[in-house]
Image 1 (cartoon, rainbow, N blue to C red):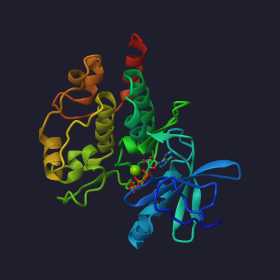
Image 2: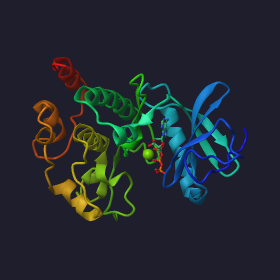
Image 3: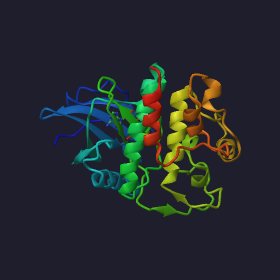
Image 4: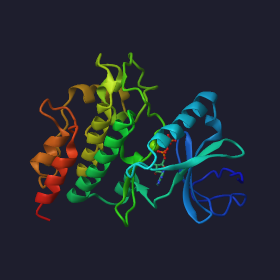
Length: 280
Ligand SMILES: Nc1ncnc2c1ncn2[C@@H]1O[C@H](COP(=O)(O)OP(=O)(O)OP(=O)(O)O)[C@@H](O)[C@H]1O
Ligand SMILES: [Mg+2]
């Protein structure tokens, strides 16, 4: 397979880049390309050259393996394989013509029914992930993609996922915490003296839905320790306070009786019922 040279800015590939390859995302550690190969649409995930360390390569391969164990799951983006490029390996994923919910929310809001429809799809995806004894650990708007024409929703990015059914973390510095801090389960910060299990994904899922419903995160601060403290101790404003049209049952699904953010373990049936009873 031919090598990719790495452009410095998204959507402005240098002349040496294969013509069918377009850089669509440049993150802290990853570069994401879109291309068509042999008539097949593909997404390529690469490590940035500066991030190619033995530890990171191990995690990169784990990401590919974990996605492989979920192969065929309709709510999980599928992987075709690993390709050796000049500078590093790339994971080749299916391209379902989707964008992340974050990218979509940047340009428009989500309606209630659309949010609940996405919620059902993500709950199905999490069901499949957990049935395979995998914890995703980084559910957020950037790691869920949706095809805006077909409405197809899939979960991506198993970069920090693992197989451990339960994980006991010691006190961890906010600088080295895995996952996206605004979505992180208090237990995942090591500050609750409790083990982390698959339910951490439901917590992050709750934050994600909160953001889809209200357009805002439940807690916003630039101070990492303060954010962790608020997730442990503070009650978020119920979504129905921000948007009165949000039914109580949906709002309550995001903020539980102890005032903690949460999505119940089996939200699909309940969410489907809410969609069916919705007047629109
Ligand atoms: N299959 C896909 N379909 C559509 N967009 C995708 C796909 N895979 C990745 N992307 C886009 O690329 C972004 C980053 O991908 P991914 O979440 O896998 O990388 P990451 O590990 O979070 O990277 P970093 O940590 O460097 O930010 C996603 O938020 C999404 O916008
Ligand atoms: Mg990601």
